[in-house]
Length: 124
Image (cartoon, rainbow, N blue to C red; front, side, top):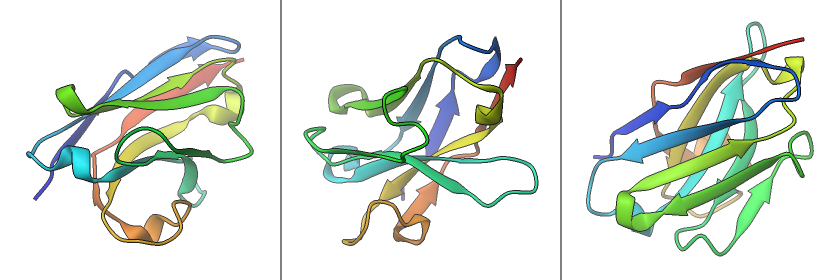
């Protein structure tokens, strides 16, 4: 069992930055790939970024490539999402998740533990 707690969300002006954190419980955190997703009102959950167990491989959605950076600190059982150049369309609830199964990093169906989410609101 893995529990995830996101933090770092809030209200920011367009063009600003936020760093989200996702703290995980459990000794096996360093064994798992991790991902960040978001969901805006009335929209489907959207893949943003993922990172493999070691942090050596990362994946990004085209919509955030070059603006968002995913990283992890296995010693702290934490994964981060640095978000720069934020836009109003980035407003959403942001979730981190654990990916334990092989397959595409882009597919939410392969992530089986999810945090409760943190709200990010970007004002224009």
